Structures are given as structure tokens and as C-alpha cells.
Amino acid sequence: MALQHVVVAGGTGFVGSRLVRHLQGTGAQVTVLTRSRGSASALPAATRVVVWAPDKLAAVGDDWVGWQDSLRGADLVVNLCGEPVVSRWDARGRQAIVESRVKATTALAEAVRDMPTESRPKCVVSASAVGYYGTSAATVFDEGAAPARDDFLADVCVRWEEAAKGVLEGVEGTRLVVVRIGVVLGVGGGALARMLPAFKMFVGGKVGSGEQWVSWVHVDDLVRIFVEAGENEDMRGVYNATAPRPVTMGELAQALADALKRPNLFPVPGVVLKLALGGAAQVVLEGQKVLPKRLLERGFKFQHETVESAMKAVAEEA
Image (tube, rainbow, N blue to C red; front, side, top):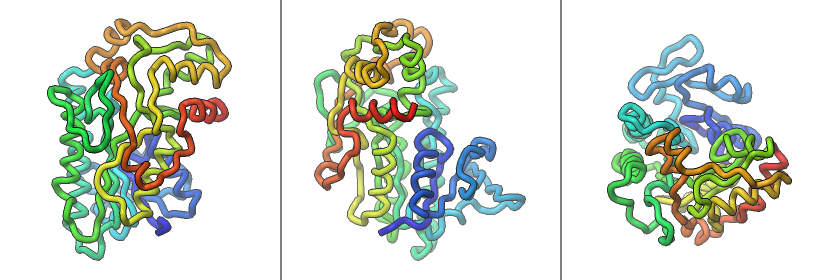
């Protein structure tokens, strides 16, 4: 089923804006839900922008309407809302990380549930993250693994997913797909936002020991996964959005260096990152080996199966 109308909540960020441009290239009508019209200024002119807050009316031009109306009849709703996790994890930071995900997801899910069946979006894709599994140097995780215990990010992911599942599972007329996203590689944001400039300036290197696992995905493959979910009525439940060949941080840094034809000589010690980010340094210094079992079972073809291929694409775009 070709997608004709797609709503993207959180469509002004790194991943969301890439998704919007891809969809518009296919001829789809795209509506973006955002908290700030200014943040949507870089989106293509054809994008319909709805300024929203989960508990308020929405501004469309000079009119205030229920933002819920923008979801009616959509082929696909993609929920990418959430504050960045690589920031200081003080009490306020942790609260923002949790609430920005759970409140927005709950509001979207309840809006869909409360519509007449014939008006509901055909599919809702709700983002989560591989942080659900916690960190491990040895364990290999697929979608059947249990969430980690006593882990902040795992707890965030459980609550984030439950905000969608608890409301939408079993709702007639709407499929729910939860996508646990890995470390996103691309130009303009994600994991390379700081690494790429450093390598281009000849001062790049691995972060931490270099031995931690990085379960990565190129941003263009991630966009294709969202589209795959919207177009295929047999996709339901949880999918890991990671490339089939995870690597160590050391291997990732070397692949970036090779693609850019730059040295890989200036590692960032873990202690420096911990001083800068506190507990949030865990996101970078500890990793997990995650496989996209369900995507591979359904025959999904990654454009970038290897980190070398992904970094070549990054270097060509940078």
C-alpha cells in the first residue's frame, strides 16, 4: 500500500526531517506535529506544520483546533517525540527524558483510540530504543529478550513502549509497530554529530575503550523501516532497527577514519565523558549487541549492512 498521508510527531529532528523529505519525494502528503513552528522552518515548503502540545489545542495558521484532527484518516503516524538522552542526568534531565516520551506517546495513542474506527490511522509506528536491553559485552539481544533491570534507559523504554501498547494493542482499525532504534549514523545529527567534525579536522578517535558494542543503523535504512511498517499490513509488534552487523566502537571509529581518509589517533577517554555528562556517559561508554531478527525474517534488505558502507555514504554527503 503506497502511503498518501503521513503524520510525523517530532518531525523536525535529525531522523524526523530525513523521513519527511523522503516521504515528500514519493509524493505523500506530510503533516508534522512540533512544539515550535520555528524548529520546522527548515522543512520543505509543502509540509503541513501543526504546532502542538499533548495537553493543549494546536495552532494551524491563525486558528486553534484540536491537533487530534490532523491524525484522522492518515495512512501512517510516526511518533519520534523525545528529549535527547545524551545530556546530564540530573533530576530535571531524567524527568524531561521520561515525560517527553511518555506524555506525547500517551496523548497520541489515546487520540487514535478515541476516534471512530473508520477515522483511525491505519498504522502507528512508535519509537523506542535498544536501551531497552541494557548493556552487555557478551549477550546478543533480539526482540524476544527481556528488558534490563535497574537500568534508567531500560526503564524509560519500558514506560515509553507501554504508553503505546497499553492503549493501542487490540484497537480495531490501527496496527501498532514499535521500533527499537539503535545508534543512528548519518550527516546532520545522531551519533556522528560530534565525531564527524572531529575526524574532518584530523583530531578524531574512538570514544572510551573502543571495545563496547555499537548496534548502529544508517538513517536512510531507518527511514525505510518506518515506510516498510506503514506499507505492509502484516507488520505488527516490536522490531529492532539495527543493521545486521554490529561493531565495536573502535571498529566504527576506524571505518569513519577510512571513509574520510583521516587519522584515527585521538581517543576520548571515558573519564572525560563522565565528567562532562555524568551518568549519561553510559549511553556512549557501554553498549549492547542487538540483531534485527524480525526484519531479517521478513526479508528486509538493508542498503547499508556494513559499517564501512554506512560510513562511505556519510563521507560522500559530509
